Length: 422
Image (tube, rainbow, N blue to C red; front, side, top):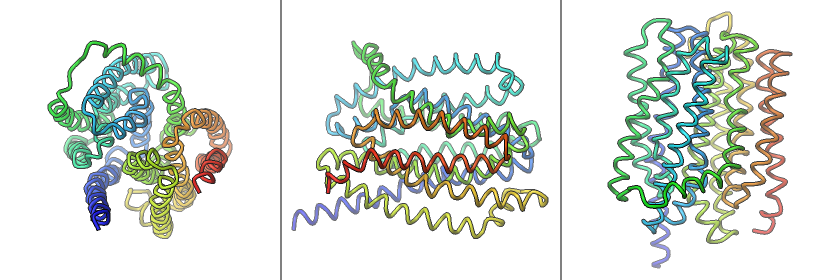
């Protein structure tokens, strides 16, 4: 009876946490969809394309700044959540490491913006986009994920996006204001992250300790291979719009950005779901392989059904969805085709996200690294060739093919482990 009551309490807590976390993530997912039609109306699809390129620039640099904190950092805090001393040293050492990395990222950004013509001609966009990288450096969400404090995760998401949306509608009033759009996103994240960080400093009495620089350097060495692979993954996810802008111009990049934003909504949701259950999956697998894999399969199976339902709805109402984004009438028919082609991506992406989660939970980081680096290099090459040959549809065909290839490789690695767990 006591065991049954404990299970009910845990189940109720998980439902409560999911609702709290979900509210924050809904704001996270909806905010770009609120501002994008306004940005298209004010700045045009060319301006939207430039905003998208700047945002992708920031997202690639974010990978350097995160440097494994959202994977191994969250995992370590999850496993040691009842040991405040380990959590304290882990948080401080990771933030010192991230400080070194934000300095390095600033240097890289400076070189790109001032010496590469593609970046230099729109240096205002890239300069202001770097504020989002600073916000990600401060962002303590990875800590709250480890201890499963979903109230603070939602608070950070809601405050940052409210500031962003308000600033866009208040301050972007003319065509050339596109250069500030990503700055407002970064400003919102900086403010909300600082509030969360102050709370953690007080809660865990965070302060520098004697060997913190040494520990940070050790982390830099340990996490290098994982971050290197994540950097290649970010190239696969975020460089396509830069390739399209380079090959087809900002107009085509703007068209791609609209469809990508909808697909990215699926990706953001999948990342949200990944983060929500990741700590618990790690803990369950750490306790029992068989129960942990069963736990993972149940959660991701139900989530996949939900994704299929959303894709079906978006496919049926493709024209209505695109009209919401102020698509011009003469562009509507080809955009509907591209959009429906792009909707195939989340169907496979949901599977690859779930399998990736299991790889991390089972400490198969090295295998993941090799797969990620190889597939990312191949994908960029395929993406460039297909876009140059057949235009915008080539971008979506290349992405679909790569997602399928990655799923096959993940399954080849995980098949013996899942068979063992049975």
